[in-house]
Length: 132
Image 1 (cartoon, rainbow, N blue to C red):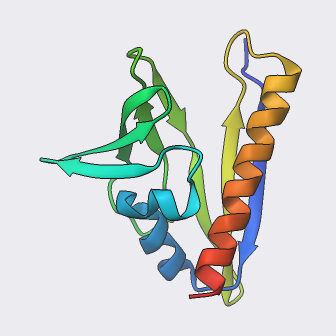
Image 2: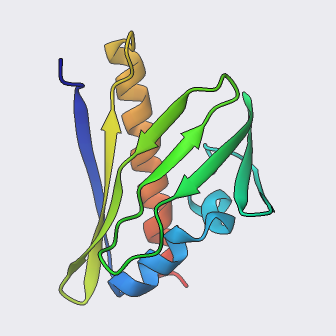
């Protein structure tokens, strides 16, 4: 059975390479995705984010020239959440596309709430990068 998903996006009036470099650096997560967590620390080759539910490990896709910013989040419960994220060139700027997947058992209200949170994060990312 296929998982329901939504593609949420924002246009950012900055070069795709600049957007990619900013988003690919886990240290920047609190600046544009504060809902994920308040602080980020690197230990050895791993990045950890302090969240209201506890510490999570975030692992981004290896650096690449295609704008792939996919990442995995290992939750305190041991579940792994795969997050598809892309920066796609569009003229002199770029589009950032986040694929939100519905978790098993998630209600419509919870899915809508998560979509609103992601849209807020994408709007903040736009503001942070365009005001830089």
